[in-house]
Picture 1 (spheres, rainbow, N blue to C red):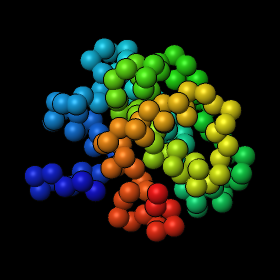
Picture 2 (picture 1 turned 90 degrees about the vertical axis):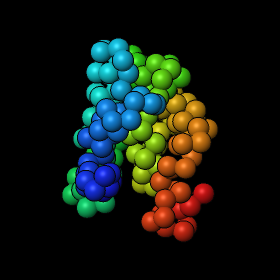
Picture 3 (picture 1 turned 30 degrees about the vertical axis):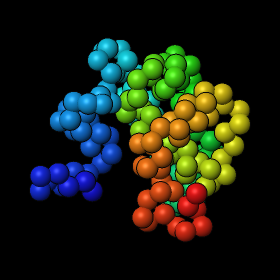
Picture 4 (picture 1 turned 90 degrees about the horizontal axis):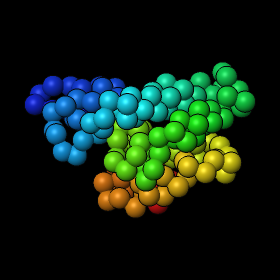
Length: 147
């Protein structure tokens, strides 16, 4: 939950869009309509296609074969990525990528077959805002997982 001006905001994607619309810099949705679509599409693949599968109770129900859902992200990045997920501007897609990669590693998902995902991750992890927001830097992160 994010509290802003006494209002409770929930759900990551709507929160990111709210912040983008309310605080104009830095923009998390590209100005170009097609790139904005790409950023939303990649975010949706991650939030709806990958994130639920990385929940332990869901993993127990769907089994090991469903742990590998990163190919659609890599395919989308082949069309959109440059320095970041969508071109050379940080976007909502980049904000979604890092937490899910953290969870992928927790569940020992093999990401070595992908080229774009780890290269974007490396660039994002070098940015101060991403360092501070990284899951292993959060107060509720288990001590053994803190970097």
